[in-house]
Amino acid sequence: MLARLPGWTWHGNAPGIHRLREFRSAAEAEVFAGFVLELAARRKQSVTVNLEGKQVFVTLYGSAARPGGITNAVFNRAGTLG
Image 1: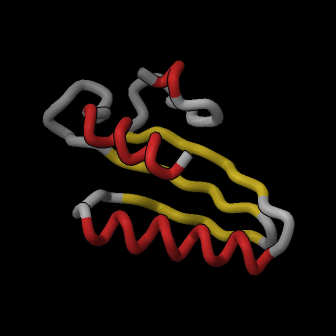
Image 2: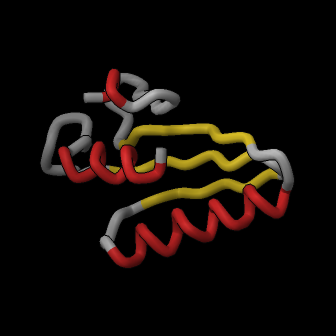
Image 3: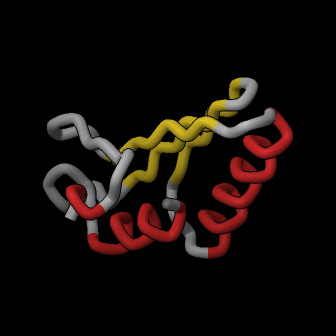
């Protein structure tokens, strides 16, 4: 499934998948970071968002009950975020 999500990576047994996005401006990056946090809150998705200038680093976490923690729901949310 990760192969269908350009830009998203998973490191071994890490509990989440990661993506670094770069925007044309810090304002665009801030809007995207806010969108990620709002979507995660609505869907009860554990997420970490790091905003640095024009870059946003997102980690979507899965379930501790599943090896690696990554569920279909996590992949679907990653697809929504692009």
